[in-house]
Amino acid sequence: MNMCSKCHKDMMLKQEQAQLAASSLGNIMNGSTSNTEKEPVVTATSVDIPAISVEPKTASVDIPESDDPKPKDGPKRCSNCNKRVGLTGFNCRCGNLFCAVHRYSDKHDCPFDYRTSARDAIAKANPVVKAEKLDKI
Image (tube, rainbow, N blue to C red; front, side, top):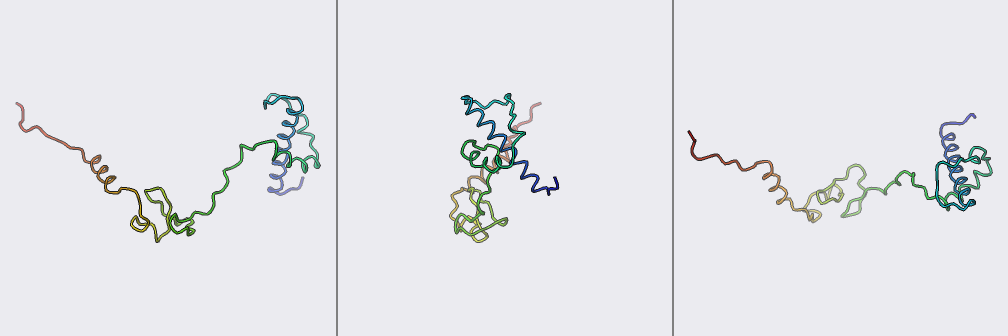
C-alpha cells in the first residue's frame, strides 16, 4: 500500500477501533449488553474510509478504552519549591521528590525518623550473642 511505518500503524489502529465500534453497535442493535468474543464481526473487515472517519466520535462515547497506555505524568517537580527536576531529582525516604537544594532532610523538614530507622538496622544486623559463662565438661 506504499505507506510508511507510522501511517501503517495509524491505519491499523483505526481499523481496530472500527472493529470495536462495529461490534458494540451490533450489540446495541441486537439488544444484548454483554460483549462476547464468540460473535463474528463481519462488518469489521469491510469497513470503508467514510466509516473510519465517522467512527472516532462513536468510539469515544460508546467504548471505554481499557488498553490505553498509562498517560504520561506531568514533569517531575520538587515537592518543596515546585521546581522542575527531571532526571536529577532526589527521592527522600519520606517518599517525596526534591531538587538539589531541598534534598537534605533539614532543608525540607523531613518527617522521616532517621534515628529510629538506624537503630532498627543496627539491631537487626548485630543480634545479641550470649555465651555460657562456664564450659560444661
